[in-house]
Amino acid sequence: MISPINRQVQGFTIIELMLVLAVVAVMAVVAVPAFDQSVERNQITSQVMALQRGLALARSEAARRGGPVSVCQSADQVGCGGSWSQGWLVFFDPDGDGTVDAGEEVIRVGTGQGQTNVAMAGPVSTAFVLFSSNGFSNQSATWTVCPNTGGAEKARGLVVENSGLLRRTVDGDADGVHEGTGGALTCP
Image (cartoon, rainbow, N blue to C red; front, side, top):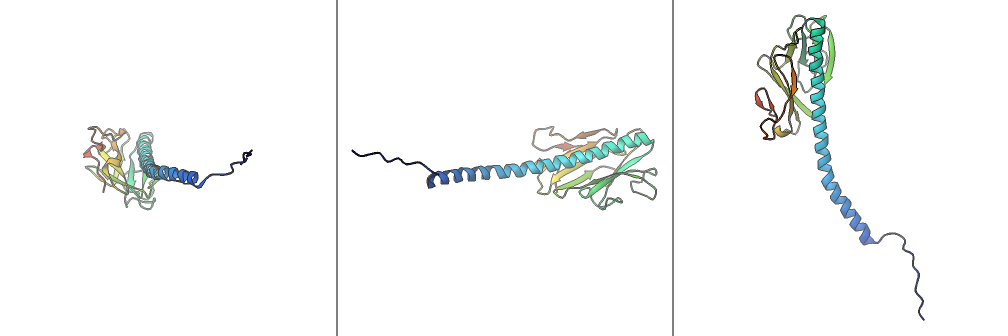
């Protein structure tokens, strides 16, 4: 009589290992681009929210202080100038000229993120917006935040109305691109 051989299985076969590696590789190919897009969306949202907080602070500080408060683009986070992508300043601006002069208090410094482009469009100035003591702004303006890779469908923005009210841009016509005060947002 032939006796059965008792073997204990220890480990995996090469075919099983290759199947597992193939499944992991397919999952990685699908997950990495989705993760990159998620990171890009979060960077844009974060930049929009930081700018929104700065503008809301400027409006409330103008009302609280009873005088004009400006928000300007700032490359060095000390004075006005440069681009919105580099950062911005919120400051008490009694003379209303949109520049930080001697004796004018800087209330908040906002820094840009290297992965986004920020631009402002407005009829009065693209360098600053001023809020008066009644909360009104000197212009209706739109800030557009885009990824460095471009793509208007990825752009998000903020609108400040003449009344001083802030709102985020929306895709009102369902074409995949958000609209500001001057129409569809565009990226450089």
